[in-house]
Image: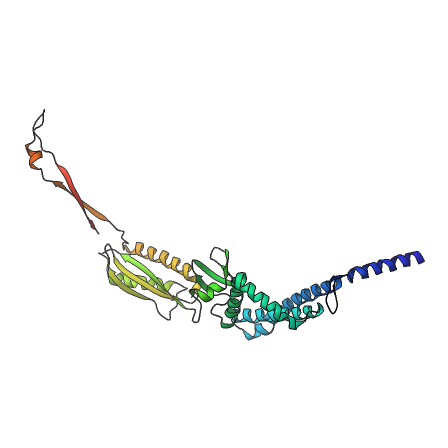
Length: 318
């Protein structure tokens, strides 16, 4: 029994020596294995506390305040950053890092940022600006360059945009600050759609106007205020050009409402016998008059005949 107790004591001493093994010697106290494990535990607990606090606020206080999704996301994101900052502070204290010496580290980092990390720093600062100024928020319909979709998340370095095809595209935050961004949901979310429609020249324009307004009025996603309108735009080369403009409440329904109105307009025109024309050309061939050479020339055999050549082709678009 005493032998087992001795073995356990030696095992505990060996484990203690391993945990207290100095990995990084310092002037005050060396950084040991147990110190690094404690730092890992602190950071892990910080992430767990952050997630629990965010879940509690999302289901409790923020749910009662009925805030905008973008503002709610910004509050939760800043809470997450604050908890991580406190955890990093305690971790540095556990590592016996002199915080006054961080100025030297900051100087070294500034040199690194100037040479190779400027894009990372620019994206990080741009992410902070996006969360504070909120030119775009989570759930907004945006267009950045050739990317069009909904903002799903604004992270420290980049923003995630989900397209209509459910494809996630990661856009650096700096592009939202330095480039041109179309935010379809910013401010008043109402959006006006313009639908060009062409009819044949023999159509009754007042009847076409009434049909278009009736189609817009029967669409459930079209707002009654502001009311739909129809403009007679121009006399086109092959059609009378109209434009139906309607208002919708959510920019995210832009493609769906446009498609529904196109189907409805086509069905209404077919029912009323109104033709939607397409460009056509009338071709006229004019034979070239016979020249002296061709008229005086005599064939070697056979009866006399004249030779005609096609001079040109004229076209008229209708």
